[in-house]
Length: 219
Image (cartoon, rainbow, N blue to C red; front, side, top):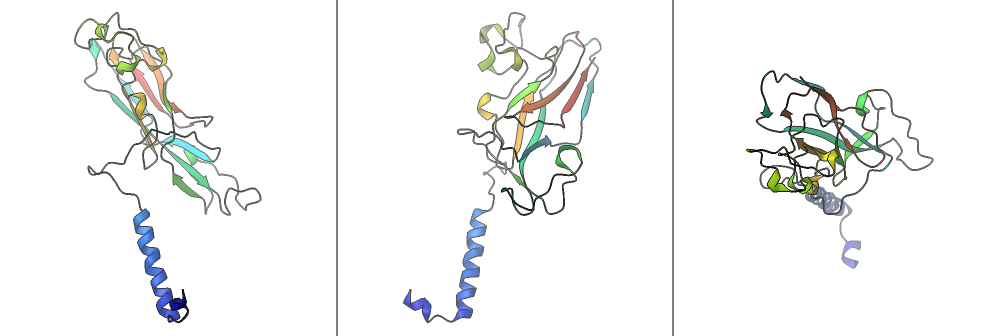
């Protein structure tokens, strides 16, 4: 401490600046070895009232015409959302100078000066508004009452899913949280079984309403 008292002010400030850069670089987001964001849902959290969840991709609707085709599709559908905290100018504390958000779907068109901070580890569960074309045989095994009755390459007419709301959901519940970049992802598998359905794919996370969803139409 005594040495610092006699240390030239110019060099002291330079040392503090360099040390700050080192700390900041150490805190920057680091991807996993494969270049993908990390996912850790061991201790998921619920979103606060200052959080926003929106559709990640611009493609809002997808149409599929099965015709005479019967059976599961070649692969699952991936839907992704992003969750972030909205930090108003002046902070989110009572008495701050922050204003209300302005127009725009999914938080777009926010007031100038607003900062959006991606949030990791936020819990969600997938929600499909219809299960008429969901594949029971491709549903995650944790939701299959008897996996022996759910052979995707055989007769799966006796495949029972519980809870039924997860019919067609492929992604296991251990992955139902946002990753290190604030992205929420899940897959679901559809089947051409002669039924027609129009439905939405979204997520439910606490009491946060997701306004921008993905629409699907199967004929």
